[in-house]
Image 1 (cartoon, rainbow, N blue to C red):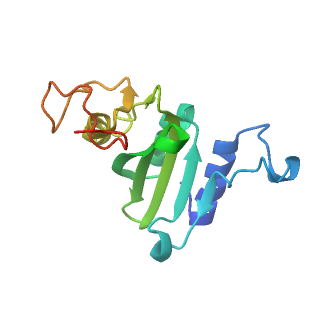
Image 2: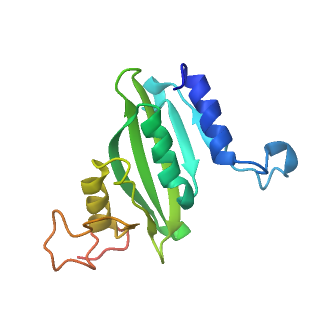
Length: 166
């Protein structure tokens, strides 16, 4: 278990980047994205760490958060219509250290799916159902991805998509 927020940030950065990843010193300014793990002042941003993941890293990241003593707070989505992407945002909190970590991944709007983390955090079950219901993001492997709040016949009715027309 990490003893400091800086230790955790370093561990997560090494895991997210993996061996052979592109570093800022290896690329031109046009191709360098923000670092995948960013540290923030909680009072200013509402999180201590913000982590950008690829869709295939989501479950492994949830497993790390679980091993580090974090709990899932919420799972939600964002529709980035101009970029033709959907973003899934996972908010974790550490109940004893008062740390907050947000992780996010983007998927194509044409095929918005990512693996479920409900096997790691059972409490994510209904958050994923709600995100699926309102934005149409599919959580692959989810045990019960049926509408939670909307009528059951609303399978193609995703009211939080920016192009939704009532």
